Length: 382
Image 1 (cartoon, rainbow, N blue to C red):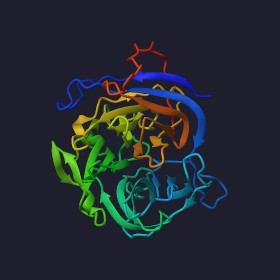
Image 2 (image 1 turned 135 degrees about the horizontal axis):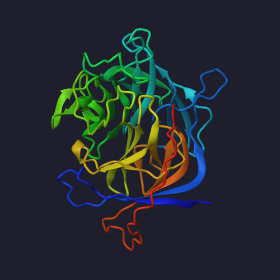
Image 3 (image 1 turned 90 degrees about the horizontal axis):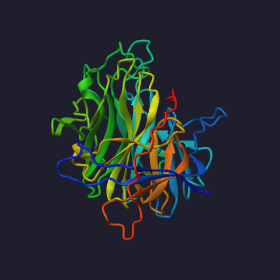
Image 4 (image 1 turned 90 degrees about the vertical axis):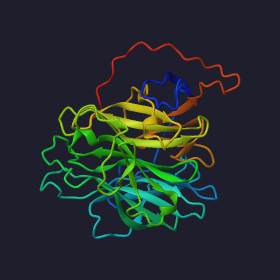
């Protein structure tokens, strides 16, 4: 039986773009419901792997749903919906490249009108800091003509500037780089927008930033991505600088780091707005303090995202929050009023979006008073 967990009212703050004055944010309702688990990968060891990134999904013209999960390598499962996907997910083949070493996590996909699949992966090259565990992620591009079973590798399209590595970091995983991202095509089909996490050695370039690439460049992406910097799309994807949409609160390379990361973005049909979910790390070990949500009507304006607000989920489950729609054409990039909320590939909730701009006839929802503050649970440690 579905029962309301809590309703969350979010009001615009000073973080709003000047082009959106006085607009109210949705009311977000979180509902407990029967659990759904996305399929982990089968690497041949006899065990099912955990899910360690965003999990993109695509639908074909016959009503099939293809879902990609990753744990050092991408895996694919198939069904008609998120409720009947094949178990376990099977490995896909990515053509090797001499200039791409280390793990590849597929974090975003897009299906073109002719059925061609495009994908983007988070890559962690080894041995950047000698024998230390730390690496510096970067982002590569792929294309598939067989529903994601095999992929041609275009190579790296986004990475951090030369000289931005910091091997004396107190960060457990990264000494620099650009990664932990999602990609969405705008509603006008002009640009793919990349929402990237940045780990530059300089705190001024750390946080969640944005880059974009023209839709028409999807088959030739190398050198075509531009990063948002200084109020415009002024820097190249390869080696360029960024101005973060959500800057870190405390340097990623300190033991008491405080930063948003791992954006997952979808377009919400009911809200007619883009929705972003974020992780929030509160130390160099990436302890998870909570899951946050933000809204923006216009991807061309990276400053237009609302101030992130914490979702009232007290049963912390890990990282990688994302919304996956349940309708016939919905995926992780497109959802309607009611969708599933996943964290680390596990969903115990529906998420319901209620408009507050008087466009819902007979809408009975009223903005509730602020709830009594509750003590937060201990953060999740990876």
